Amino acid sequence: MTNMMKVRPHPTQNEALLFEKSSPGKRAYKLPPLDVPVVDPAELLQGQCRVQQAELPELSEIELIRHFTRLSTWNYAIDLGMYPLGSCTMKYNPRVNEFVARVEGLAEAHPYRPDTHAQGVLEVIDLLQHCLVEITGMDAITLQPAAGAHGEFTGILLVRAWHESQGNPRKKILIPDSAHGTNPATAALSGYTVENIKSNSEGGIDLDVLASRVDEDTAALMLTNPSTLGVFEGEIHKIADILHAKGALLYMDGANMNALVGKVRPGDFGVDVMHLNLHKTFSTPHGGGGPGSGPVACKAFLEPFLPAPVLVRKAGNREQGTGNRKDGTAGLRDLGTGGELHWDYDRPQSIGRVRAFYGNTGVMIRALAYILANGPDGLRQTTEDAVLNANYIRRKLEDLYELPYKTASMHEVVFSDKRQAARGVKTGDIAKRLIDYGFHPYTVSFPLIVHGALMIEPTESESREELDLFIDAMRAIAQEVEEKPELVKTAPHSTRISRLDEVQAARKPILRWRKTGNGE
Ligand SMILES: *Cc1c(COP(=O)(O)O)cnc(C)c1O
Image (cartoon, rainbow, N blue to C red; front, top):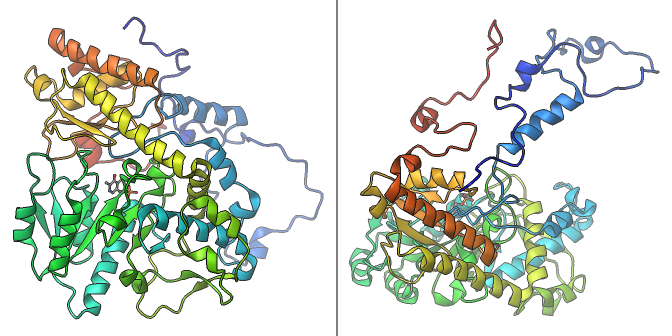
């Protein structure tokens, strides 16, 4: 590597907080003088007015803009390069979907609008529901949950409500050790005890072990498929049979649906209830704390328990609009041909609301735009590209990095740092060194069943050229580990701050700025 400097060095490497930069009287705007009588706010608010000025930073417009622009250059972003964070599906999301989500009539539709005045938005939501039901092969869906983990919670509440309606909520939920960490948290939060199922040497579920663990106390198995190892559970229909024989249900964590869309449908292989992550698979940027959406799709017998309200079409139903839609585009032709849509609150068996409103509509609109723009063939192609990219990386790196599970990879590949650790270099060190090469780190030390895991998910976004650059970087780092391990162990060397004290940051986070006498 010849030059590790950024194109343009930062003007300052230690940008102060806005509060520290503030000086009294500075303004980021100029308004003409008031030409109406000034009302005393204290009089207007009848004593509710604050007596002390709020301590807000005062800056000029250019100071403000430079502050945030400088901070933005310290960040890595999908618009700068590859973001191979396994399990996170950090893919590129076409800008046109952002445009659609900002169309005024959709973006400014108020959730308290009467249904009769919101038919356009409701049609969008209805059509998306149909598309997702078709993609998953399930019978019914709710778009209310705001994230994947929230979807899990909703889905397991459905499981619980159904078992209760059968007379016994049951006690435990089985979770394989390759599951996403949110799964056991969900089960525990829903009042179940969690029982771990050890994966077999292929990274899948051992059917005999499963059969010996399922009993009349088992409410469900929560299965991430493909698993966090990027392994597809090949005998999932048998897993479903084992559960169903004992009256237990199969929950699928479908956050990794980008490896399945257009190829297989969970509803066809025995899944009873599942969630999707619209903010991974269907075109909303994942991460950064923005809004998400974790729809829950289920089989017909769970439908009565879905969170209220549920979107229904009034009498005079359009016949062709609701059934057997083979793809999203067919649905478009039906728009406006049937009765009005409305929210139905009269759902006596519902688990209740899981969110204040109907879900994150902006995320839904992006998802629908993405689905319709791709169409069935495009979605299938996306899936194939995501899997191809992961396998390309696997092939190009498996001679240098240990591959603990040799089972075919789907959308992500998990290596371990076994060979590098022998030289004292851990997965976290390699990830930090990757920053020097201009890439965001992969997911470090997860899944937990792989010691020293390097979890890599390139997504379908990346071209062969970008993948090759990533592979070159990973290969160069493997060589550095052999020749000069210290260089890797002390990386990154090209950032303004090198290694943070991650333990302190987790144990004693300082989340609030306090003004001190000398402005420090
Ligand atoms: C991301 C993810 C989740 C959690 O989704 P959030 O939206 O972050 O709550 C759950 N399971 C799997 C497999 C995931 O990849």
